[in-house]
Length: 375
Image 1: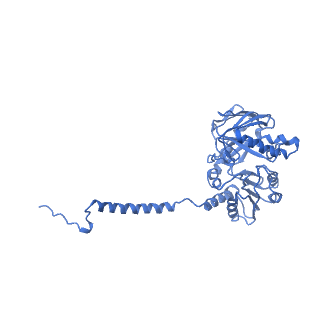
Image 2 (image 1 turned 90 degrees about the vertical axis):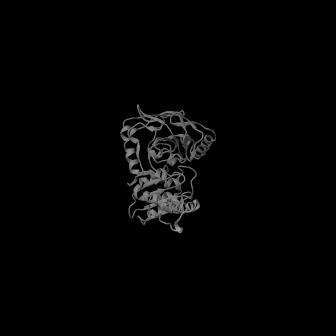
Image 3 (image 1 turned 180 degrees about the horizontal axis):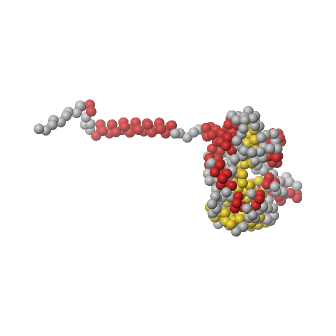
């Protein structure tokens, strides 16, 4: 005998497609609401939170600021947010912290106002997030001689301070740069080429390679850039000859037209490259006019050469981060006195090559922007 079909109550019977769609819509709507709530819970931190986290990392990891140390934070009107974040992070470590907002300089290497320079000499730690670099200034050199440890951040922006090169593991950067040391030993001739036309040769004193720009600046008389990550040296004066094509960035400009520098005996003798080349000639010319006649040509000294070693650094048109990008190399023009040279001219501007090939004597280091060494 067949079983009698059980009656379904009217209130639960799905009589039409519309009834089914209504139930489905109600379920989907609930899921959307749940997903929306989840998205709110994992929202991007605020800029203040990001600045605070980076500042904490600078204070604790990079500089290892200790209780009771004298700390000076020097910023300008373009970097006030970063200066404030550093101040808030530092006062949790030391009560002897001073934040100064100085006028924005006109170019890299310009000396800070005398009261700022005097204060720098009295510190154990100096943090300098500024639009233009204080690295190659007499004020920083004197602060280092007097025992300070210094981190300069020329051209730093809120985005650069919280992302990219600043988000790297600086202890890994330190190891990577240290691994380069044995390859530099006893090699004195550097040759740089690129598919864009660079072909330049110069000598170095291999003992003078700087391998401490790794973001860890925890001892007296140490100096670093942040974001960090480069190995660099002063080319031996008078030895550089050839053609240098800057194709990545120059100072704070991401290039859409290459800059060609003709170099003879360590000096730039010609600059080509449209309007930006004209701007370069004008800027360096104006600095030269302020010098004694016999020193004016020194503004065109090729002052520094280095490799980028930071795998998180981005090429974005700010040389502070551009020159740290892993696989690039850079040349700086102007003041080399911070590296022991004779060109003390108050201007120092780098340009970045994106995909260089580099040899030290007969040993190749880079091939089209890729390290061929095991680092």
